[in-house]
Image (cartoon, rainbow, N blue to C red; front, side):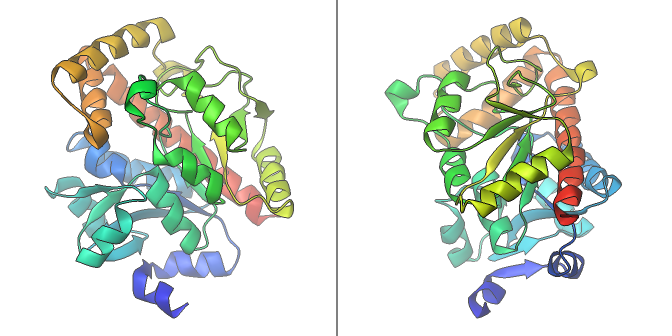
Length: 306
């Protein structure tokens, strides 16, 4: 516990709520520092926290600032993430290095899950999880998010995996690792900007109470990992699958021609897709993230009521 106090700065509101068994929802910070353009990134950060509160839960945005894991960010910290150049992008492999160096970084899905678990939080809202990249049979480019979902007991509410990925392979890896993938009020697996990837979600739940029952059974069985709650983007904001696939194909070709590799790929593709869709993908991204934050708040409330 002393080591955790040396590592984490948890806001008093979040610490008190966790201690009382109340509903808390973790939010990642990569969407603020790397996922959205300025000033929409800061506007969206506030919208996400507001959506969690509207659902009756306490938001806990996580980031690393000056060598400390911050669980719950004030307005100044959110503004810093949104405007400061040089904020690192931190996944599992990067987190201890940046902490040891006293650096600052925005946490990805994997790193946010690690920090949330240390803080005693079990529900997390994000836009879309990472997964198996297209062409991974040659590049071996597979997100650390999948491994984290297998080992860290966090329920991740998302609009499925990012549509730029190889979704069938991503679903196969999640199955291999024993991670439940639950379509929320749908039998179709959503694909970020579109409601239906063409794949079937392995399981379905129709209410926050149904989701909380599944999560409680996972804990009772001693499962070490988490679950994916796949929540489709609101219909009004969705982009048709055929249209977005064409755009993604163009963006992938552009990334290859530009020599973009590693963790720079996703931010590049999101920016290029936004340009190719005339800004529609950005609006969809914001809409789905807010929708996920609201549902996560409802699920956290159902869990706390058990």
